[in-house]
Image 1: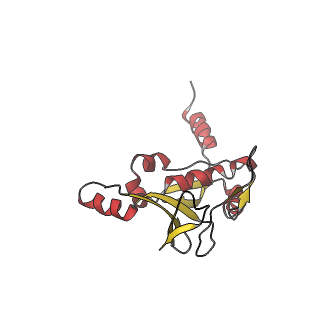
Image 2 (image 1 turned 90 degrees about the vertical axis):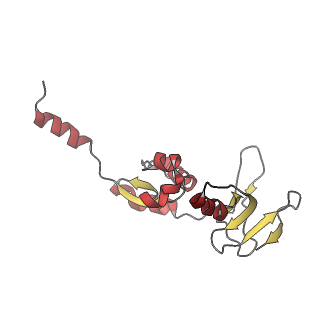
Image 3 (image 1 turned 180 degrees about the horizontal axis):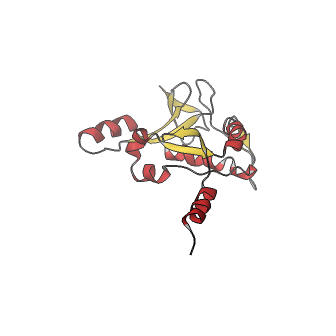
Length: 160
């Protein structure tokens, strides 16, 4: 039988110190960031990922999804996470993929929205979230919104 000092030594040897380098309100953003450093050998995981997955509404309450890394990997992980979005990249067996950009400021930090979040969040406080559809793009830098017609060849049809 092992003594309590042997058990303490085993437990303390398995404890790792990690540093949270980034916090995310939304789960998709955290999953994208988690996948970035893995090819270069930086080992980390997401904290509170499953809580946000079960109830996204409490993300701000618990501080969002946290991305910790080992202290020796902080600098390298931050450099990788701060890399700019490439304007285009190669896809095997296809022509190069060109990232969509904001027609107002040219930023690549854009997102496609399928529901009207302000309406859904407001109605969630009253009764239940009402997911009104909204098929539009939103720029993360300047806040512009626009809708693309399917056959327009990438040109915006309407801009707010």
